[in-house]
Image (cartoon, rainbow, N blue to C red; front, side, top):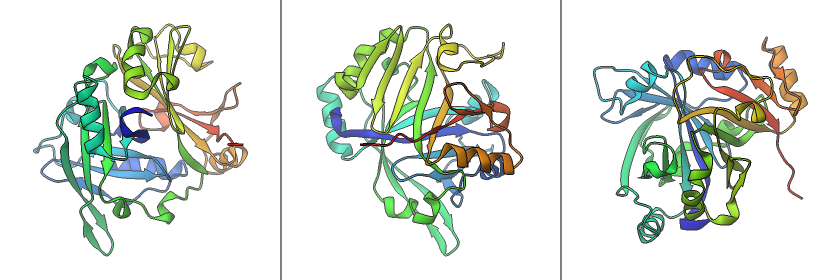
Length: 290
């Protein structure tokens, strides 16, 4: 992939009550890390770690402090997917390359957060590059992340999930005109990784995909889905699909946990937004690489 971008780094989910969200996702079979907090802000998170990517549950713990816009997002449109971070293996090279390609990246930002471990707090460090709104999402919705201290945020036991989850398989974004974004993503991720079919734009990001669709074609991706009348105006992130080791075992786990997923004709198991903090969540069988 171009610009030292290696795939998906993480997806962000904004939640009204962080502790309640942790309970929801644990019941869904995910292992949740210890809590982290953002230095100087009133926000905190729990993470769901996989081998190469992860999910971040993000909530407000002190509304008197800066929330980086999370308060506005939770007010309208409410809980649900907030954004997607792409991964870079060399943030300095990524930034130089994006500038040379005239893709208008932000400055290279340095961030830290506190991770509350039983043995004591640690400070994971990150580099961040925000992308232009030409990407079809705001700069807060799509950015590039590099972990300077990955050993602090990943432990083998955190990557083991009772539902068999292995990685983020796809994120779907509703936009007015998917085709208009094709040139930008060819320049960002390489033409070989971008496919435009019947006005659905798919960007291959390693083990996962970023998919853009307009609101008239959502039912092609999500058969049987009923769209609420109060959905926000485009663009907005509508769904996340997680690949699992054995879909049958995932279904059995969910049923035993008192959760009845909707079985979709394409084989996916669907959890409606009311059961996943505003996220349309689907589980699919992880593809075998031959």
